[in-house]
Image 1 (cartoon, helix red, strand yellow):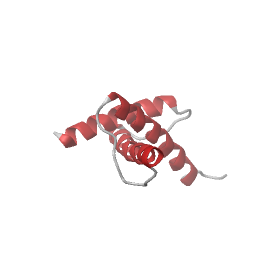
Image 2 (spheres, one colour):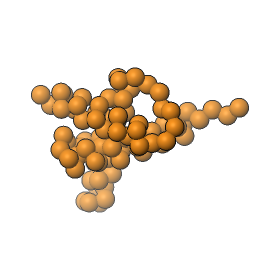
Image 3 (cartoon, one colour):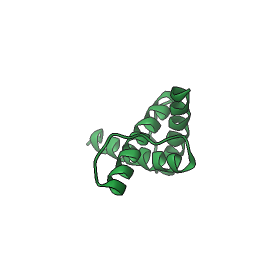
Length: 89
């Protein structure tokens, strides 16, 4: 059941982050889920760093605060992905 919760959290967080973030990100439903799961880890780790002062790899859970944390992490992941894959003409 835990894997199903991660997939649902990833889909919700990735889809909401793609709607909030300006521009076209591409990717299908699988890319959106992966983006959301990565966002859950990024957001959960940053939240843990800010609250406890220690850097740990922690993922957000399938709760309302966990969803907000995952969305913020997914927005950060979209931004970083855009920086690394930026094409110059």
